[in-house]
Amino acid sequence: MINKFNINNNPNPPAVIKNAVILTLWIGITFVGIMTTFLILSPDIFTKVSGSIAPSNEDGTNTTLSKITETGVYDPEAVLAKMEAAFGKPFYELADSKDTGKEVVSIHPQQTKDSYIATGNMSGIGNVTEYGTYISTYSSPSISSTGKGMIVQNDNVATFTAEDTGKYDSFGNLFLKGSMFFESDSDEMKSIDGKVGLYLYWKDANGTDWTKTWLWE
Image 1: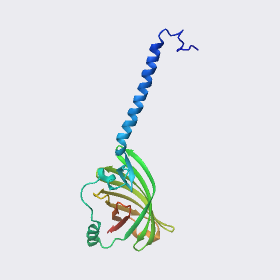
Image 2: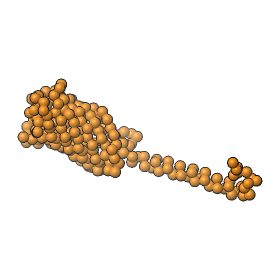
Image 3: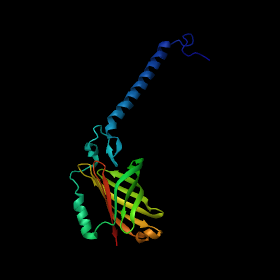
Image 4: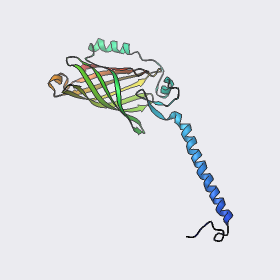
């Protein structure tokens, strides 16, 4: 094998050295450029925060939600009062859902896939456990989601598909309004088979959440 850097085989070693130096500098400049770009963009990289997509922020405050919020504060109690005036008390309530999985589905558009488990009570049926998965699309400051899942009580099962939409308020609270379609061939849950539910989902900036659902008769 010929040694290309042997002075006897290369009458112009300074040119070779010059090219090597230029190549080294080019690699170094490229690396620095990539790292600089990463550092510049990293504050705007979207991360999962309390069930929402928000720019990462070291202080962990509600300012992490600034890019997908709009001014104003939601009043869930007022909305609940209006729903109860129109439909009565909710027939199905959940509280304190637990995340069981998170996945980035797409960055153009920004989408995540989130799974959860929650416990609650359904009128006429009793205590139940809900397992669900939603794919959410983020378009500042709005969020829209489609989901599916199961509602289980012992060996009785109902399934559902759902869609919702909502926004964050200026304090980082999330409020969603949606509808869901129930199906079940279980005797204990046949009362909701083929029915439509209208639901409200609330999650405050601390992560406490609830879902309340009314049957659309």
